[in-house]
Image (tube, rainbow, N blue to C red; front, side, top):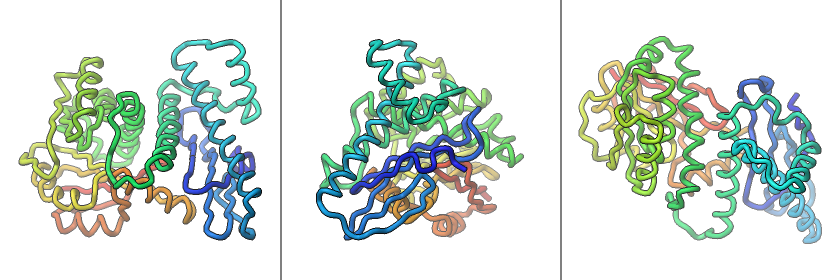
Length: 349
């Protein structure tokens, strides 16, 4: 049973915060999650931490205001968790009065919540917290904005990019059960489409010392940071950055493994797939990212909203499978190896 069952109940209009502590080092194998969601379309749906729900009559304004305050308190609790992790990350004690108050909140949340957390795991959780809060605030501040990737602030780009390191670690987990993929990853030419600030490429280079990587992106603010990050890690000889649209690449049999993330528009993927197939060597693998299915209709629709708003497309496996088959791929498999995203693995014929 998840440890947070019944700890926080949420109700909100139009945003969701999910913290998943699953599959991290010393954490228990069962999912530990805080889920705060709300739907208000004439009736209120309150989700507990397992995603169960109950329905009640329409709320009055005072009741809705009370529920909104609960949600605000829960969001602030997320801030407390992030603040404590950042202080630990920086090796900073902070102001003694504030630190003591932070830790008092966390004791009330879950006394042993952060026990045994490794530095990389802490960084991943901080990234998830910031990512969720930024998306929520962006929805409120710019509800009229068209789909796309609007972020230029270096701090925002870096925080969001650091979360992609978990994607590379997920590749390693998937490869443990797939000997052909594992053999290629050990010594391969890897194309990281949508490399952003480069953290996925950097993590992959560290996991597989024989890998040579090309990081591809069109977003110049991200690529500037990627160049700095790659240089800081001393990986300039193994990671090459290219500012280029994936729909325009002309590489032929140049890569053994290609990563296609779930954050690209459908029309871009449709135009890019033939070029990706041409760029992949025979027997090579395409790793096609899609966001994982959520446990209930509300959280699924919220995931799809945020995917579309940030410029992506909410792919489903059967749709992708058919596109890959037409593009000349075989051995197409849907691999679920991470709480937030899945990978469709396909081999080039």
